[in-house]
Length: 216
Image (cartoon, rainbow, N blue to C red; front, top):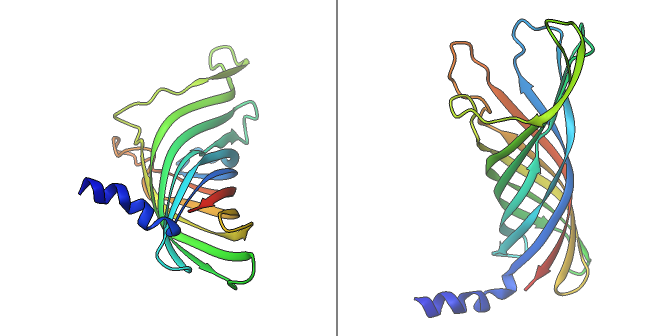
């Protein structure tokens, strides 16, 4: 069995590829503001970076898995109190596993593709910066620093749907370059059901990423 597992990559190497990914994303945060009608939620930009691997069963069908560091950032401000402004920087480790479908002529170096599947992730860290008002003095102050996780409140496990579409340029037999638009739609809330008042919070993250792949 050990010998078989060692030799397996060599027998199937024509169907494997590995690569690196770099890109940017825009996260849309969704939560109920309840009675605080002057609270506004805004999307915010972030970065994504990682590695990717794909095994192709056919020229048009494969399975792809990525290991990504992705930011899901957002901003909160108030209409009535313009001095209140919070920007959250949330760092995640995401593992999307997707079916990859490709299309295009075999004799043409440019080929289209789309990916669809699910992802799981872990909320690594959270930081915030901005400004607020001191309730006692009425003066504005600035702040910046990490946000500590609360095991009773925070749900650090992130699960959802992943999908994307893009184009691939095959430079030669072994090297290819991809440009892909990707979307992550979370199905798990950042906040657990720990209070009588429900406070569910979800993220939808849209990204544009480039990848460089080596095909075995």
